[in-house]
Image (spheres, rainbow over the protein chains, first blue to last red):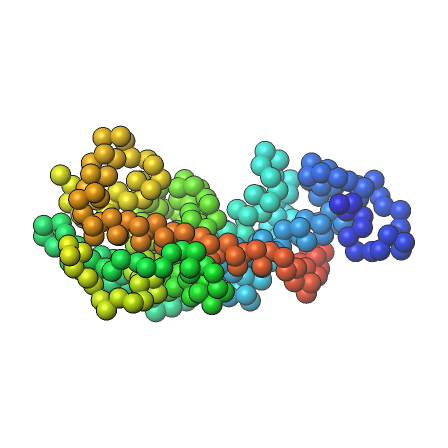
Length: 223
Length: 80
């Protein structure tokens, strides 16, 4: 895409400046470092959708996500000279928006959260589960087939306590690795692994009534 | 012999194929003899599939939207 054609139709466009006539990410970055307005607009338009998606998932609010995304872009504008270019621009922006969103989440007043322990399996002294759940009769494809059910899953993710929900989002959804997640959250890699496992277990508990709807309750698995 | 509780602690590593061979064999042997654990692991696996699928679908939709007012606000803020 030619950066000079972002805002104006081709016939009304003034002759683009050399900085604006660019193709490829390296040229975009060079134009950004030169302060080229069209390049900045291109960077925003190319990335804002994805950044809003990430931020909304973390903050659970479109308004808060818009604030975080704005903060992220302003940080990016200020720090463009520090961008090494050894990763994709979108990856760099992703990191910035994740951090901006987590910072906003930390500042927000903590809502009344569920206790994660209430959603984890209980164990008897002999190491067996106290209440094994039912066999799930619905597959993931069954649940993902309708928007109503997909929204249900997203709502259940939102019910998780933030310390566990953020790890689940960063690892499973945003595909950050353990080290990246640990750095983003300011916790140790071991804590990331523990919280991720617990978050998944808790989500499984929340999903269970919807994945085994015909069940009358825990079954005897040995029958 | 691992207990069900111990098995549960290694589910993530098992699904990521990160268990050493000896541990994986113990894990698989336990699953073959323990229907509740087999069910639990399958449920855990489906949970991951559901969360990824549900969020991916939403991302596909949100990523396409370009909030014009926000774009303008960001570009304006840059000038300040």
